[in-house]
Image (tube, rainbow, N blue to C red; front, top):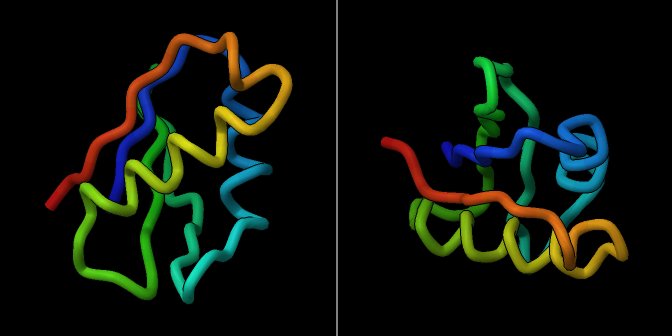
Length: 75
């Protein structure tokens, strides 16, 4: 599981990651807790690597390149 912390654009983050797949790694939105968005990860057991992948995908968006957020793996 990964956790994305962001005060803004949460709906856009969910949309981008739910439709994203790379090298067999996919994300499925699980729940929102305040500023935290939790995603289940399939296709890898390395959640820190999955968090880096999600962060790079978000930053590819026009709005994502200027968005302040963090991403990290959660056990």
